[in-house]
Image (cartoon, rainbow, N blue to C red):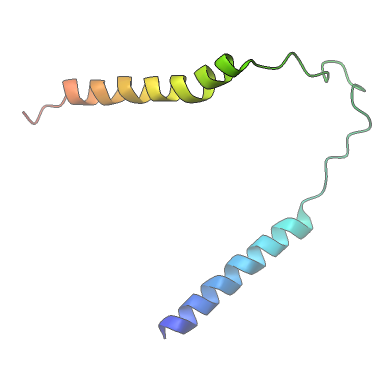
Length: 75
């Protein structure tokens, strides 16, 4: 029975993926820059990218973990 369930789960996952691919349509944008505000801004530097996507989440994790440990009432 375990093989049957695995086959069923695989079929459901494959069917769901196929339906999502078939039903998702490409973005129907006319042309880049056609609307006001659609021009991309300046890119981020390496330092800004690392700060935004690495340092900030790690800092938030440390702050939240520190608050949880400091305010733990089970001690």
